[in-house]
Length: 333
Ligand code: ASN
Ligand code: ZN
Image (cartoon, rainbow, N blue to C red):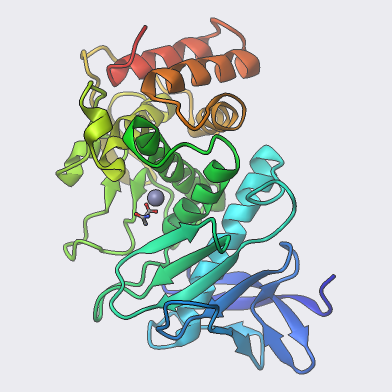
């Protein structure tokens, strides 16, 4: 139980002005989310270990949207953890990363010039860098949802982080990062099928990854082939991200929320999308019920078809769309 459970207001650099869960302790507000199992957000103050200091405030108004205010990064990562917690609860009835009602915690301002973010099963926590000098902190909603979803994957299929299963592990984090954006539906972070579009990691305004045509990043694969297991997991995720986009929105040119996509298929055969609402349910059921640590792309196809059969019926239109989307990335029977 959390004494003085509050909903404060924060302004992040990416999320805009949002509610943040806080707790009143004595006369000080703490960034402790009493509505979400007491998720705590810490300021590492450029350190690289431990928990630094808990973010605190005297009036429950957090951050000002500028990077120069240390609380701003705290707002973005606390909001990201809350939005991801709410997504799994609202959509799947999942009670936290391990479905045991226990919160992870978040650490902002890790190290100096650190251009990454990561999940750790050891600390059961998320950690975020500030980016290189004067760049964008790695604290956007899709980054938080990606990292937190690594925790969900570890607690379910536990996909081994190398080879094809590693690509599926990475794709699962990108898939739920997109799904969390659609569920949160922020005006200041328009839902899209891009990964890291707010953090300007390339310095030229391009996103880190594209789900409609992953090769647009210059390194990710669009299609499965027998060499995929030897590719870095952040690139072998490409075909599965592409599968999820095709299943959600279909092939060809399409604009969603003002963002333009153009998704090809391996054999040129068009795919009709079923919408992200149903596509995410199929991926989640496959992940949490059928995939195992050694699942490869062929196994993911079987897992999602079984999930689609469970949810929508074998050989239903939705089931057949799943098969067509796998064929679209060169995975068949
Ligand atoms: N941000 C990266 C990821 O989640 C960190 C890493 O490579 N482990 O994949
Ligand atoms: Zn990842």
